Length: 250
Length: 314
Image 1: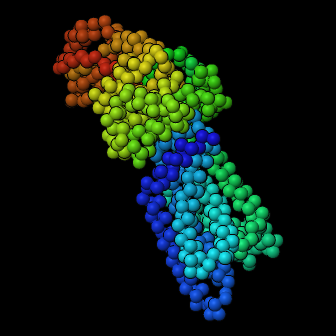
Image 2: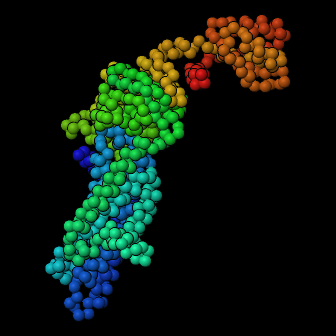
Image 3: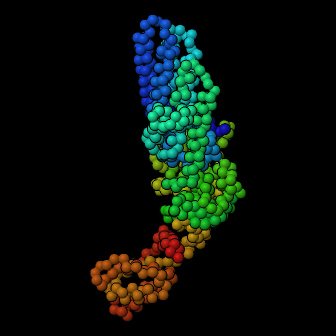
């Protein structure tokens, strides 16, 4: 798979652009702030000194991270294909002997790389807690990160799809954010539909799936769901890339 | 090398290409000539596998562009009309990126890049950010990426547009130098440029192929016309009528109204016929006063567009 040149170029492009650094900074500042407030809360409620740090601190922290992704990931994914369309370079690279799947793979993996760097920045919190507390309950933290990571995979796939639909990055970002918020609220409205509908929707829920990971459980059905969700949106992106040939062009 | 048969392409309700057919032999330099909107870029986009045709067959090196898209793209170097480049990349890394995507192995990559840069005169700017380059240099970068690793077929969409005269002649020289070993298709709306570089010209308008011929034949055909501007004092309708009846006259148009009886006319006639002599005789017979007679050779462009317009109406 000849995705490597595209991957290299995209990663370099990400880290050379100011917007990426702004987004990373915002994420790290906010996640750090959330960590601080959660820590303060934990300290306050941990009167007896024996509360579980996992359910008292990390659960809330990962929840906040989960929420943060809704606003931060679209800002990373918006440029992936929209920019190429705007610059006209989509015509350049698609007339090179490289497959659409390779282009998509390179771009998707580049965004994943930035996402991983972003997440890695939060490890400092883990280290801090470990140093002050202990590292005994590291497993739920690791699974928590796994859950967030899988969620990120799925959301980025969604984001790259929306980016492929437009040549305007702002439209891509807001559209992606809107879609994420829709996914978030999909299972919240018990009053809106029948019981059966709610049951079906819960099965399809994206964000809620992370809870088990946060408690230290790794369910194969959750992993499969994330993989399928990711695959579905990557498939849609390929369709979208292919359809440019059929729609009108400037 | 390139066979196109019955290619049509529509975008919604607009028919951009209508039943286009032509052949390009290996080593030929062929020019697509036509006004904007003629379909040149669309035809090139089909050949480079950017968009598929709505109907018809296009083959490059015997391979169908829709069925063997990847192999076809390996044979082609494409210069985009839009000169799409990555503005935040520097020249050398960009060419390396292009080379890697084109599948040039690591061993030959540097050599291929240096070769392309040398041909396009980019050595001085190899480390400049593309966004900071002048338009001429950006166009050279676009050309360099197309030339990388000597592709069998070069598709150049308006390669000299927007350049200053020195750069234009430079690029033309480069393209001319490539002929023989590689097959080149280029598009332009400047007939003189096409005559200079190409061995064959395909004229297009409104999505159709109007003429295919060598530049020499086309020029000879088109230069048989002469334009004469006359200011005649005389009854306008009679003047127009009489002028049209002169042997060898193709067209009479009134260009300007100086006064009720004095109009400026433009007469297109066949070279070799003595229009001025006939005009004088007419004027004497009808008692017109000739206030101005000016002959002008039609520029190749003017002739071309008139021919295209005429063919389009027929």
